[in-house]
Image (cartoon, rainbow, N blue to C red; front, side, top):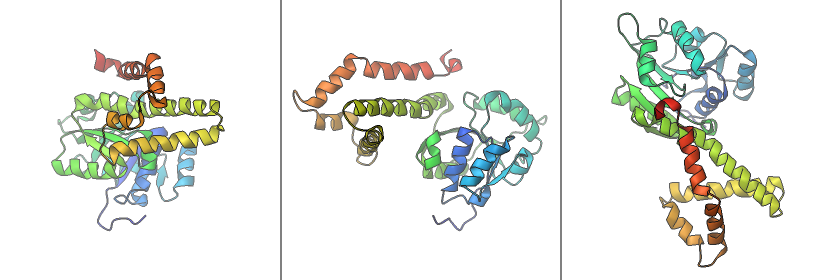
Length: 277
C-alpha cells in the first residue's frame, strides 16, 4: 500500500493488549502513517514479539519513555487501574505544546484525564477520549472521539486517520459510553449472533466452516445494503418477506423468543455503572 509523501503523524501506543495491538496493526495499513512512525511499548516482551513477527517495521520497546519521546500522538491503551501510575511517569516528560494524548481507557472521561494530567502550573495537553473496537486491526473499526483543548484542525487530522481505519465520529463526551456499548461491546454481540447462526447452519446440514462462511458473507451483504446503498433495515427486510413466506415465519419466531428485546436489554446492561447513576 503506497504511503503519503507529506509528513505523517508519529504514534506512540502504550500497552500491547488486544486493543493496543489492534490499533498498531490498523495504523500499519494506513496511507497516512508510516510503519516506522508507529512505536508500541509494553512490559511483557512476548507481546511485543508477536507484534514484531506480524509487522517487523513497527518499533517496539519495554520503555514507555523511549516510545513517547518523538511521538506526535501518544495513545494510552492500558487497564484503568494502571492509568494513574502511567500518567505520573509520563506527564513531566510530555511536551504539552506539541504532543496530543489519546486515552483508550474505557470509562475514564475527559474530566478525570484533566485531573490526572494537570501539572502544578495548571497546564494540560490536548486530550482525546478515544474508543475504537478490535476491528481496527482490519481497518473496519467504528471509532468515537471526544476532545478537550483541541483545535478544529487537530480534530480533522485525527478523524482522517481513524476514518481510514473504518469509520470515525467526533461526538459529545456524554455519548462516548453509548458508543462504547454499540460499537465495542457490539463486536461481541454481532459475533455471538454469527456464532448462533452458524450453529443453526450446522443443524441445517452444512459443515461448521461452510456455515460460518455463508453467515459471514450474508452479514457483509446486509451491512453493505445500509452502508453503500443507504437503505433502511426495514425497507430491505420488506424485500425478502413475502406474504405467508419463509422469512416472515422465521422473523416472527425470533421475536416470539425475545430477539429484539434481548438485544436492547443487553445494550442497556452494558452501560458503565457510573453513566447509569
